[in-house]
Amino acid sequence: MLLSRIRNGEEAAFSEFYGQYRNVVHRFVLKYVKCPDLSDDLTQDIFVRFWESRSEMPEIQSLKSYLFIVARNAAFGFLKKASVQENLKEKIILSAVTSCNPTEDHLLSAEYLDHLKMLMDTLPTQTQKIFQLCREEEKSYQEVSDMLGISKDAVKKHMVRSMKLLRLTIQNVLHMLLSLTFLVISILH
Image 1 (spheres, rainbow, N blue to C red):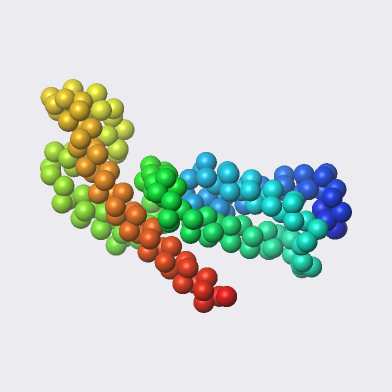
Image 2 (image 1 turned 90 degrees about the vertical axis):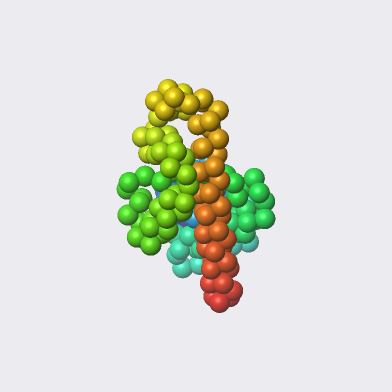
């Protein structure tokens, strides 16, 4: 059995285990932390801790289930840490904002998308237009500057304004999700 071989310190068994579950755990963790780099680090930490604590592992029925519980707890612990460390929180928020794509958009509720649109509608018309050109049409600041006949710095100021609004909104959502996560954890324990 793979687990008993790992417990005995057999590196080949651990390599097999790592190769079999690394990508699955990475995708699982990525759903929580939203940032591929952070997910890579966290996944690596999970497997390192797994190897280091192999001799202390309890008797388990399913190695895969145990691994996912460990991964979930590691992701929750990381999010708890991120909620008080501005640099981690910022990285998660920026990844969540920039990693949105049409395939993932269907996962967002219609109310949330409507809420974001309402927020964007509160911005000045010029800021909305610049945001659309830069983020949705993927134009560079220089291209937008040339198209609208304004300076590159003016484009940057408009983008900072719109990104600040989005960042605050996503921070509020993240805080709400973290609160709900901790509530669920406390109920389960």
